[in-house]
Length: 314
Ligand code: NI
Image 1 (tube, rainbow, N blue to C red):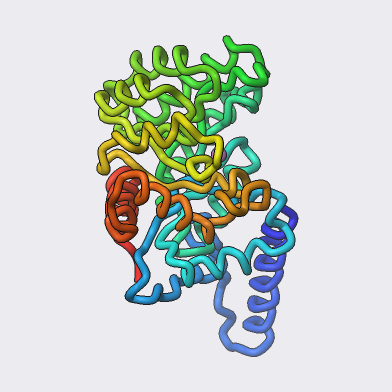
Image 2: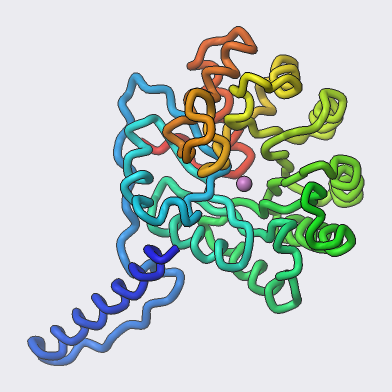
């Protein structure tokens, strides 16, 4: 994330120079007004229009702060609107990525951010960071708590730490009214048990990169939860997920890339970005026997409602 940090330093330098010029040329001296975090130091980059005939889709789970975008982050992001991407929710996973993700959301009008600590980083969670999470969640571009949950695939850190941190962050979601993005890997039963305890206070729940059974999906829908579908749906060996998609109600589906991971076929194994999201949307349409336009409209509407995003900016 060298790029974002370097740029932040430059922005501060630029302001410094502007102040100097005022002091040299104008009478009387105009006092410097302090720059607060509520006032972005550079103007937000406004959206560029999407072609009217192009169905707009929303990427509800991306990691553009990932180092694999260090070389070309801004050119990739600035090319997304031309590919029909209405909004991107950039997802954080630790205290550093929270700052980087919010910086992207403050830079681009069509970007939003989540705040949360991924189960792998659960050991970062402490009273000081918890207070910061509450503070960050007040930012108007922050639209969710996530990704949070349990990951028993690597089993690191210990399960009891993961569970404690997951429950604590569900409390943040309940107190701030923000919906939650769930990471559940090989931990279905414990994830469900913890969510059930807290479900009443939550404004919305989406399971990202869903890998559970058809039965569990049915249970999630009964509880009013969402599933976001990514590139794994297009993989040739994908069995359970197409079955889940075939019966899942259209008003419960959202689209996600989880980029730079999980690029859809035929780009599997390459770096993913939201420009490939149409391949996942196309696969959903095929499985459900509906038009691409219908998939785009339904998933976009769901994302707007779930995260409280603006209707497709154009
Ligand atoms: Ni992710």
